[in-house]
Every structure is written in structure tokens, then in C-alpha cells.
Length: 405
Image (cartoon, rainbow, N blue to C red):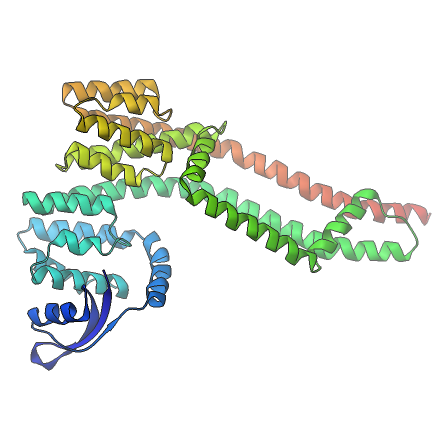
């Protein structure tokens, strides 16, 4: 649906600006008049402006702390008996991010005009994903919106803790790799060429390893580097395009799950995410078929998504969900059996939560062990490369020095 920027006069003659979602400029003006706001200017946001906004939203999306804080504050206000529109009005005064504040103002104004809170949230997918919107819908329909916000906040905090652990483990290896690559570039492009030129002037032959590094240095300091960069960029672009296709995504996910060391870890993360999300959605009161539809959209793995789709079809047909999960190759037989037991006993939500907790605890241990194993490997590989470059640098100097005696 199109979005419009507007300038209007509110009650008391106050000038206000904002954005509004409507089918046409006429519908936008009508919505504003219902709010007792008289528009003086309405302009549709161009595709270019929306693309620019999407670029900023890409980075804003990564900062999930403000969404969690907003959700927790909404839970507190609603559970204290404050009306939804009043709670949104209070929070607009506390939000520091201008774009997020504008989004909440628009959502509040649309709720005031009688629009569903859930429908208003759906237009801001940069901030509120399909899980968030689905759980809010359940709370809005059942009249327990405050409790839904509590559940959402708990779920988001749990996911953020897991992501933070993985990010923390990755920081040291990334810093180490960047530092070593910088050292290699300096030695290859600055030190080796100068030493090679000095020795060549003396009429001495360079060792073969030094000559090869000189060739590499020539490529990196000449227009050939541009060719290499363009070729690599083209390959990356083509690969990304291919991975966006269904076949490409399937091949990527299948390859990742088959990796010797990281495959089991990725598999555990996918299953833990599935179990945690499905448990939370079922606990919020969402129906099984709808919960599976939502989970399939956020699973992040095409093999798992396919299995969830099959499970949903079986649920709609009156069958069980465990069999397609077992056949997917992602969920191991033991976990699939636990799902089947939970389904038969009517304790599927509890069983899924138990599976999620166990897998996340196991994942933490695996991540720590991988980190302990990967860091020394990175150090050894980088030390070997730098040592080889140092050897190629020192060898000609020693040969020249030996020839002088």
C-alpha cells in the first residue's frame, strides 16, 4: 500500500508532519480529517525514497534493543490498565530514534481511527516481524494484549542472548584474521618489492619463492588488481543471485548441514529455533496450523521449511506432524520422537520448550569447543603464511650477504 508524507494543522493550530499509509491521496486526507487533523500538503513517497529508507532500515533492523525496550514498556503499561492508544502516546515521548518514533506515531493515529493494531504493525515489517505481528494478533483478539507483549519480550530477549553469544565468540577470530591480512598486504606490497629491486640491481638472482611473491606484488599494485576485484565481485554477485532462487537456497542449506564440524552446530541451531518459536507461538494461543505457517517463514533453512510445510499439511489433514520432521534430515530421530510423544500426550508446547532448552545448552558447549579449536588453527595458518613471506624476504638478503664475504 502506498505511503504519503504529510504536513497538516492539528487542534490548536499546531503544525505537524508525519507519514501515513493509504490507498490514495484522497484516502490519506480522509484518514487525517477523521483524526481532526487538516492536511495542507500530501505527497506520495517515491520508490527511490522508499529504497533509501529501506537501506537505513537494514541497519536499524540490526538494533533490536529498542524494539525489546518498547515491547517491555508496552507490557508494563497495558498490564497496569492503561489503554492501548494512551500507552502508545506515552512511549512516543520516550523513543529517541526519529524513524521508530514516527512509525509508532503513525500506528497510534491509525488505531485511534479504528484500524486494527495488528494491521498497523504489519506495515512496519522493518521493526515488527511476522512472529511479533502474529502474537500481537492473538493478544488483540483474546483481550490479553499485555500478556502477549510479556511473552514477546521474553522470546526476543532469549533470541538476542543466543545471537550475542555467537557474535562474542566470533569477535576474536575476526580481529585476528583482519590483523594478519593487513600484515600480509603490507609485507607483500611494500617490503618485498623494495628488497627485490635492490637485490636485482646487484645482479644477483632472486630465490624462486621471492620471485613468486614479486609476481603477486605486481598483480596487487597494478591495474591487474582491478581485474581480479571485478572478477571476484561478479562471481559474488552471480552467487548471491543464484542463492536467492529456490534451488540455490536448497543447495546452500544442504551443503551447510553436511559440513564436518559446523554442520551439526547449524543443525542444532535450526532445530532449537524451530522448537523455541513454535513453543512460544502455541503458548500465546495461536492455532497449530497458523503457528507452523509463521515458523516456516522464519526458520532460515529451506530443508526445515519444506518439512514444516509438510507437517502443516498433515495437521490440516488430521495426521501427525512428527513424520515429516523426521524425514527432513534436519531433526534427528530422537528429537522427532519427543515431538511425537508431546503431540500424543497433549504436552507439545512443554516438550518443544524442553527440546529448545536442551539444544541451546548443548549448542553453547559446542560453540565454546569450536572456538577453542578454531583460534589456534587460525593462529597457526596465519603464522605459517607470514613466516613464509618473512622467509622469502630474508633469504635473498642472506644470499647477498654471503656473497659479499
